[in-house]
Length: 637
Image (tube, rainbow, N blue to C red):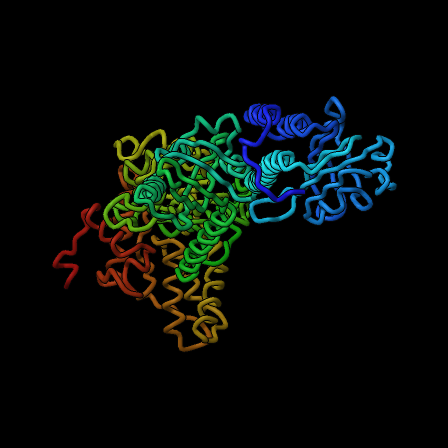
């Protein structure tokens, strides 16, 4: 075999024709078609009846990629190269046997059967020199080592090596893409490709599941359309997309969205990064809805806990309903009947008759007893904050609204809300309350999306609401919505037989709290308790007894005539002799005057009129102004 280089000028016309055919036949094909064209043209160019291109498995096995057999392409074969002419090629060497192949390799049965005389094989190497396979030709005739044949053979081998390396890179790339596609599609994290206007381009299965999308809906979806129309949600998404416009990464922004299929809220943690072309973004979303709902539930429980702690700190009229008078028994029978339903109850009665206690009894006997009972005094709310207290507000809804606030109706979801002094509710809040009763939904102040709520409403008032309806001070439709089941509580003067056991219960409670020993109440004191008209009802009785226990010096409780005068006419007795029945307003005015005279017109403090009447001092001052009650020089003397 000569080492003298061969040039194209030294090639014969047939060889040049063969090379041209090779170039032309393989120029526009790849893969299997390329290798088949290659071995066909190779056999013609070097003048053999057999030619193949094969790849190695890294060991001793080889497999043909294309096999020219005499005059046609035949099926590919796989074999062990040990004991065949190919074994030297596997080691990376050029192998040429001009003659005697079938005699030299008797174990290679196919070559023996075909009577193969000559063999020429050349390894195929990649750009780094690694051995990938080999190219071989063989024939039944001897094959001399002509330089021109070797030159042609090398050209074919180089072309085959380049295509085999390309196919391997393509295969590796396809495998990588398949792995990426599997990771992309099956990942628990949502991936979305979108443009800078939030139009979706592509989304994986997790994103479809999180956002409630079908595969065919992806291309027509705009991400902004999934954002609820609330100030906080809109602000967050605007800020997030501004960061993309500045070509900066986002870092786990929490966004509130609405699923496209059913509109249910979903919260996601959102990362997005612009692609190098600047036209699209790669977005990753993680569903954190469960975490957000748990945090909301936790926050709601914390607010309920704070509310209940405030309730525990506040003074209640009494801890149990004491008494067996016919008037009270009738009320309690109604309580048992209505408690099992979800009917709205309007509790009316004079101040101090225990309207809140009856509301608690209804709630604790209902199916909602394991849920919160939220109490709110409508008269004690500042006029400008009534709606915010009842229904909550969004961040930025008004000056000073620096955070979102959950209203009392949301706190009471699943439970009961008690609206005390409902007659003091402003007109705007009355309209919203009517909507809650009718549609079971409301809007936060500054919000636009309605919030569904499941709340039982109990209301109470000592005003004559029908009179307020006639005077256009209270909505008629709201009145009838509230008074589905009216409960009128009897005043204490109509429950004389309940006074002694109730008084003893309260005395024992206060004595235990203060640390005094009180064994009983004197007969004279019991007589005074029964004779006194109790314009402040049970609340006044409670305050009188607490003061008496504090001042008591003996085991038997005594209350003098200076505290419980027996010559005071009750509102009922005065109304009996009047030309016309006394109005509720007149009764209320007289009662407040009586208490103010007893306290020497002291409004605030532990012994003030507001404390005795069970009102907030500001509420009492408002009542004084409304009823036209002023302190005269005679009162001051």
